[in-house]
Image 1: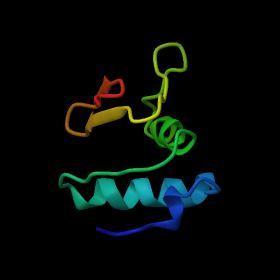
Image 2 (image 1 turned 60 degrees about the horizontal axis):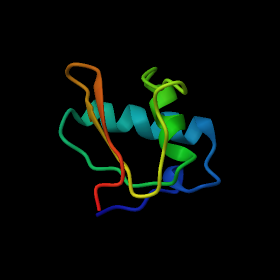
Image 3 (image 1 turned 90 degrees about the vertical axis):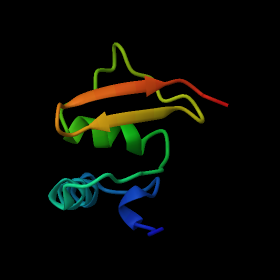
Image 4 (image 1 turned 45 degrees about the vertical axis):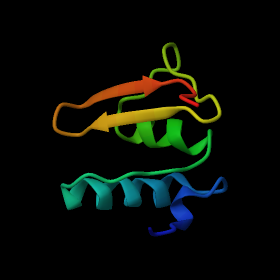
Length: 78
């Protein structure tokens, strides 16, 4: 487990963009946990966010498959 300031609520888009690039460069599965304002920003960076179809409810999960560019949304699975 690694902590990254780029996933903090107060993150900048440039810090988040850099982290996204690092994650994609690794080319292996990575789990990311963050805040409701950071996840949509991360999906925007990946050009996968649609405010018309996505919400970030507490406890929700987004699964991104970088090989296909698809996102699955699981609203609060608990």
